[in-house]
Image (cartoon, rainbow, N blue to C red):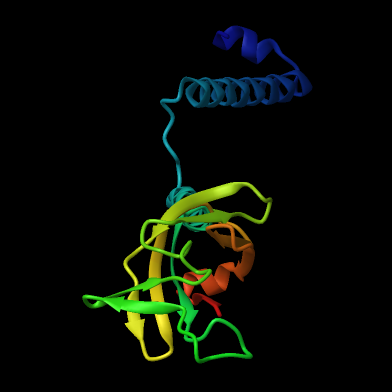
Length: 185
């Protein structure tokens, strides 16, 4: 607007013109800020905003780490012991014998031997993993066969079945502590 037009305007018109120009500048500034934000080229204007974003990213990484640890697979280590004596009524009959530092089972327990399958099911009843018995070791109270079943998915509890002997249930805490012990005889 030129000087002559300005001076010819009434005071009320001049004030309205000033308000209009201020509004227009604000609108144009807002449009530029929106365009910058939409293009992805805008920068955070305050260090406080940067801190908030940084804290949010760190919190997200912590949450993802915690969630990943819940989904982590587990390895079950355990053992089954075939106890001395074939029943509680008669302990004079041995259910195992020694063979060169290893022990072997017999008299109704010969299905418990090195290489026999160990089947683990999750809390939903699905097979979670399969392992095998290791070589039997003589112990003062019987013959012990170790086993390991790796890469078990997370579960509230697990059931373990060795050969056809039926399932025994263990909590996830028992499995994590390596407290998976079974016995026969």
